[in-house]
Length: 398
Image (tube, rainbow, N blue to C red; front, side, top):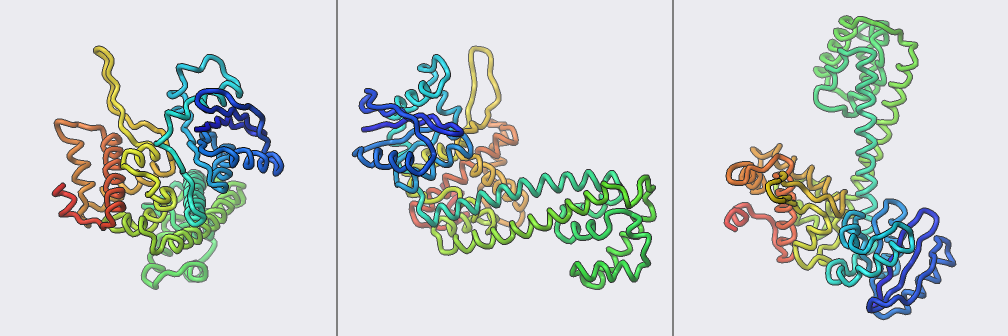
């Protein structure tokens, strides 16, 4: 068995090639066409091989995509996980040492992370899933900024955002970013402006108009509508609308790519999951046939619960954050959604959450959520492997 450890860098990577714990070769890998082509020929010349590297953000993504395109078996390790594997070997820090150590731990990874390759369709789903996740992060940051800026102009405007900043509220803020922008018009003109940009029924339109006038009249105005911050508010609103529309487009595309997929149908069969989160999770997990056991799927996601005890010192349980952080975030949102809608759907994951919170477990909220994420993954893996769909009565009988 051949093991190639790659220490990934920004401009180049260092490769160490071992066979049966004996070094065969070492060389620098550049990211240009000729270098990568030579490397693919080199790896193809080896009968059985495993490429090992650390997950270092965008730089390791290039190596991952290279392995998937060429159908090379690889193990992409969380840096903490790699450190734990090689901590007994690590004496100094440089690219050459790291590459050699990664190759030397290859035998320990055999059977755990062989062939992580995704099909073209699965890669496309994962790409859309990541794009949506990143858009969500950008949208949430902009919403926070908008709330801060609007509060500076008029704290009373917070009344418009009682639940969330959706497109209608954002458009209202764009139209009327300052109380003076409301007070300079009569009620009829305000209604016409709103009607032109936002679809409200007549009753809602009247209520919104009256609320805007009341908010503007009750605001103690400290700055004029010509303040630069008002222009910034409009720019943020414009950016938010663009990003939300883009997210909607990507979400529609991802759902179309997931239609008819076995894993998507399994996840969607669990009451309360929702199409959006089911599609995102399908995009991140890919083909579950890669994971022979639930433990291997758990290791891929990285949601095992750790317990620390040494002598008289004991710490609370915590979640090991190794593996796919995107999956963990989606699973976290799914479990929260289950709890939020527990009175609408029968779902044993909610039962399991409250079981973890009570004696003798007495788990902290986040640890209980982590346990539910683990339980949900186990259910998904079981249903997928046995070609079943979720059944509450069957779940609680287990």
